[in-house]
Amino acid sequence: MEYVLIVLVILFPLACLYIYGYGKKQGMNFLLSLFIKSGFEAKVQGFRKQNQFIQKGGIAFVGDSITQDYNVYEYFSEYTVYNRGIGGDTTEGLLKRMDESIFDLNPSHVIILMGTNDFGVLNAKSKDIYNRMKKVVQLIQLKIPQTKIILISVYPVNPTLDQMSVGGRTNQNIQALNALYQTIEGVSYLNLYDKLLDDKGNLDKTYTVEGLHINQNGYDLITKEIKKILT
Image (cartoon, rainbow, N blue to C red; front, side, top):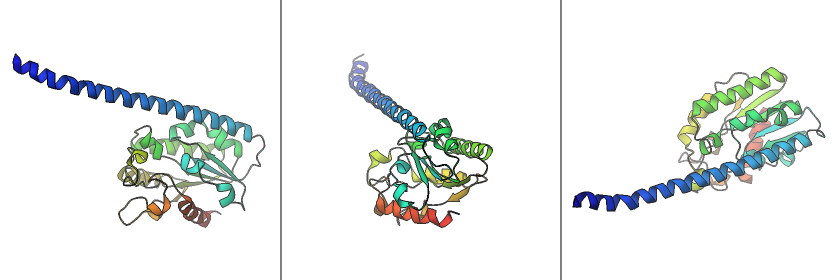
């Protein structure tokens, strides 16, 4: 009996700490999801308003915060461009905003970079992300078949710089997703993953803010590579 009591005395505080930590994590995840949802809805509403004034037939850049932070209006000043990036967005979110981000623009090209947040926010599997991206591509091909689709590889991460920002993303999972992206028919697949790597197989610190997002050196490289295949 005394042995049982000793075990309970030891395990009870440990169990309480675990429950507290789990609850705190779930609460933070809930708050994060609310924040992302609020930002998503505000951005989509903004796109809807802006689309009343845009010149159709340009190049649509579609993605998450990496696209949102990409100053395409200056990097591609010789083109008519639209930035349809939303911080925290996923392939699930993209499927909900196809009208505002792509169809209403009737673009000549759509350049898509999406998938890293499916790992980081949704904890999704590579195959599930691939299936959603494939659906995105098929919807574009069905509704605006004249639009050329450039699908960019998901970029590598560097957990040695800021593990908290990188979160649950791993280069192994990203590579698996990119391998699936390459099989999607009817797109021009642009492999920028390899271009951004360092000699250890991580996102090169020369091109990143904190191991996930891209700095201006990175955007400069990315711009040059995209312009090579714009036709």
